[in-house]
Length: 431
Image (tube, rainbow, N blue to C red):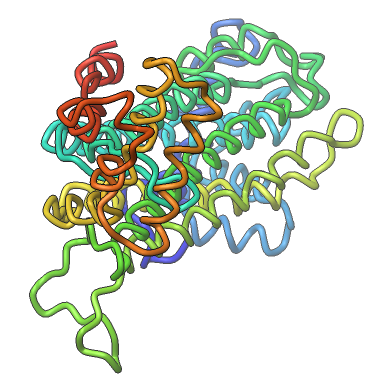
């Protein structure tokens, strides 16, 4: 995490203050459950809540000697609680604290990311509706294909991010588990009711069966979903970057007064935000492989996953949070040029209507092979030499056998490609 690509709400989830506060709450709730089970005195559980404090600097100082973060925390907590501290952590192991805390942090991070997705979806929907019927050229392989609308382009991305939202909801549900099961997961020294109590208090589900840790396939799923969301961000960012290219110039990032595009070339207006988003997406995706590799641990547990998660937890969620907010702002402020879209759409002299002619010829009785030959012959001539495709069609005696002039002209009507825009929009936005 670096401040340049961080937002305070998400960084707070991963702060030491938040982490130790969660540790304290887990221990205190566990004491309440133990007291209800008459394992420890009620007065001891009450003392933990009333006297329990921690000092981050002191914890870090203790850890330098103990080389164990949970022991350092418990030692510092005991300094505040006093003699009743001997009842804290009864029958528990460090991973009960660490893993349950990690679940809580990832759940809170997911809630923030879901909010980010809602804002992005709202921005995409608004701009899609705004340009529902704005004609533009669709491209395959980077080459002009057939007309579409800019609203349909944005609606496609809306649907993609809506799927991502549903994926993240499922991933949040999967990661939101609590394990308070003791040193090897057998509850040998602690009652399963303690786990149930803590899980309810911390708004988690119980882990049905744990070893010393919560199974890491859950975490692999979570970070994989973050990686998919990052790829969707890049997908939309690259579309904008291509549309901003000088030769295309159909849309561009907002360029504010006083903004500078280049230290050397004053004329430059570069797609720096979407290029940045492409880079940030790579960082988020880089967490996926380590998360997958964390699934395979020795027997009931080793700690090879620990160092990985201390980094990828904060880095992936903080970066994705920043990226989603940046993308929302890009979409809201995106400058769109309908006239340039129309100009590009017509730049090939009508070639983009070739399929309409092909299909109409087959409807008139021509074989598909003959129809394709007739349509492609004139298309390649216009492609290489320029000119007007409709004029070529009108002058071909073989084609004139099938169509009147009016019928031919109707085949070059771009509205053919907007016939089902309403249907698609209803599917996307009203389903």
